[in-house]
Structures are given as C-alpha cells and as structure tokens.
Length: 163
Image (cartoon, rainbow, N blue to C red; front, side, top):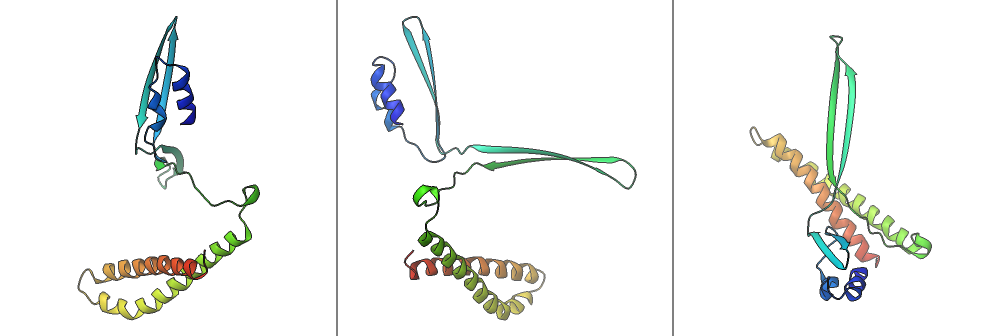
C-alpha cells in the first residue's frame, strides 16, 4: 500500500492521494493498470474485497476395469489459498519457548480427547438406543465431543503455561 501512496504523490493528476487507505484484508487484492499515451496517463483499478484467491488442482487417472476397458477419472479440486502466519523467532526459526508452547498445546489437546473418550463411552450407548437415527447421532456426538474437548483442553494448556 505504501508503494501506491508513493505513486499517488508522484502523479498529481491521475491517482487520488488517498489511495493508500484502500480497505484490505488477507483475502483482498488490488490490481492496477497504468497506460501512458503521449502526455496522457490513464489508471484503472480493480479490487476484490473479501474474495479469497483460489488454488486449482486438476488430476486425471486411468484404471483398467474388469471388462477390459479403461476407466478415466477426472478430479477438479478448488481450495482457498491461505497464508500461514506463524510466530517466528530469530533467523526465521521458532524459538525454544515457542516450540514448548506448541508441545504443551498438543499435550493438552491429547488429554482433552482422552477425557472426552472416557465420558462419551458412558453416554454413547444411551444415544445409540434411539430408534433409526441413534447410531448416527452417537457417532456425531462422539466425534464432536472429542473435537471440542481437544480445543478447550489445548487452550487451557496454553493459558496454564503462559503461552
């Protein structure tokens, strides 16, 4: 954004001076096109706010079938491009304290899943007894209980160890 501000100051007639205050998020992008013909300078802007960039992946595989033909499978995957932001120490590497905090969170999450398992084992048979949808509800309950307990226990471990 600072470079846009410099360009705005350089060219008094084309770019508005408040260009550097454009709203932006990790998922926004700004495209600028500059065309100069003779003494005229034309600027065009395109912004995409809160519209994440996507990554596309294509995969094609071929497998023989039992009838002797070849079955072709095309897979199209589209995912959001994410920039991982990790705290970095000196030289772009994690410090010993940061590594210990990551280990403590993992230990807390593991212990939380263990506690959720022991509690869910006693509740799951009662949920399974519900006609027709019981087994499905029991599986959902068991999985969600583990996930939530791991999240809470990991947060508690971080707070307890001053991370």
